[in-house]
Amino acid sequence: MRRFPARPPLAALLLALAGCHGQGGAQPAAEVPAKPGPVSRAATIPKGVEVKGKLVAAYSWRDSAGDNLLVLGETHEDRASDETESSRLYTAQYRVDAGRPKRLWALNDGVDQCLFDASAEFDLPAVSFPILGRDGARAVALAYRQTCTSDVSPNEYKLILHAGKGKFGLRGADRYGVRNRDQKTGEVEGLRLPADCSAGAQRDLLRREGGSLFEPPLPGCYQDENDFAKAPPAYLEYMKKQWFKRMRELDQAWLDGQTA
Image 1 (cartoon, rainbow, N blue to C red):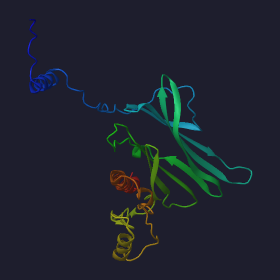
Image 2: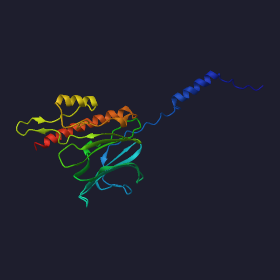
Image 3: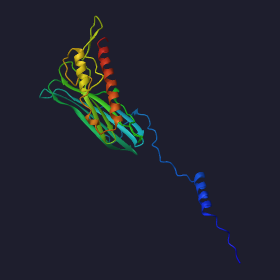
Image 4: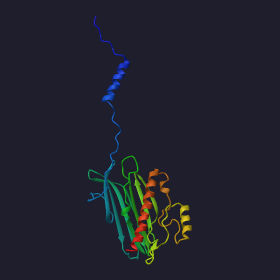
């Protein structure tokens, strides 16, 4: 009579199978987005990228979403027949795939038909490309100032963040012309830079300063944080840090310019 080999116990089969997975059958871990590459000034602008006005800067970088390009342009129209001036800003981000650009978003702003002196310009030192999420993609933070005036006074200042499909902003006034240095004594006069833009903090500063020609939002402060009500906390945290950092720099630059 023919004999067949005895079957191994089920437990032994399960142990053997587990051993195979432990040695060479492990499933690969989920892919982690590569670390974004550095941001650099773009040397060339691909065909199909729209630039309105004079190109003032262009930046390129690679992140988990692909190859990216940011362009910034400015236009200024001198006195028209109606004796007004206009200055405008334009910026857009593109995703570039195999040399073919696709616009992700665009921003247009500026001053139209100003009866005084119109100005609108990007604040290039405030442009940054933070990594605020876990997807390995860079956000874009940019700032610009604009005004229609005939005197020395603060400009309207906007710090805008584009992250994913969202746009978030802090909007207020810069420190242009706020403080002055006495040329004889070297003492600085004028409203100090606020360290907190809450309504209560601004009122406290005005009381300590003994009043001011300005009213909230004070120069160096933004109006509100409403854009960030439903945004990840990291967005507002980053933008507030950038806002006050830049206001300190602009405040000092204005004072330094008086002694140059």
